[in-house]
Amino acid sequence: MEFSRRDTLALGLGAAVLTVLPFRVNAAAEDAIAAFTGGADIAEGGVTLTAPEIAENGNTVPVAVEAEGASAILLLATGNPTPGVATFNFGELAGAHAASTRIRLAGTQDVVAIAKLADGSFAKASSTVKVTIGGCGG
Image (cartoon, rainbow, N blue to C red; front, side, top):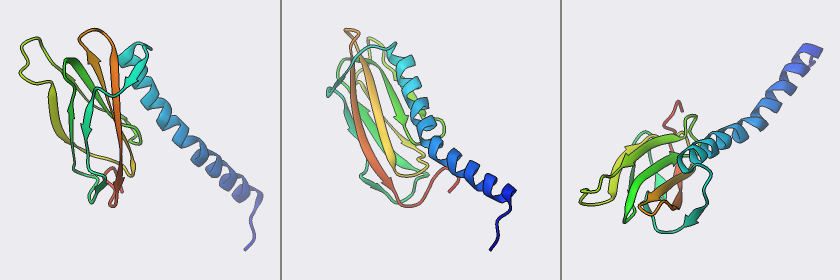
């Protein structure tokens, strides 16, 4: 098989785009975290994130998050084209600082929950979910 100069350039450009794409997705998740926290430090722990280790279908992955004393919880799927999944806000009269939902995952990736606690600090939990059938376009 012979490649023309145009074919070679197209293959090279395609390979370059594929190597940069994961960095762009991670940057979007980092930007969402920075917008939520305002650049503040995030402590590990204090948040309980419940997600399956293996999801048979990426279209409906059950996720639950809980953080005692949280005023808001940000839920992210770092590998999705748009990583922000949900933000749960809790008022002073909230009976529980917990939420559950079903999310769509594009493939195997990390699900991250960041809680803003009542004292203004932030706590984080993450879980890797292996998806066997893609949810976002695959």
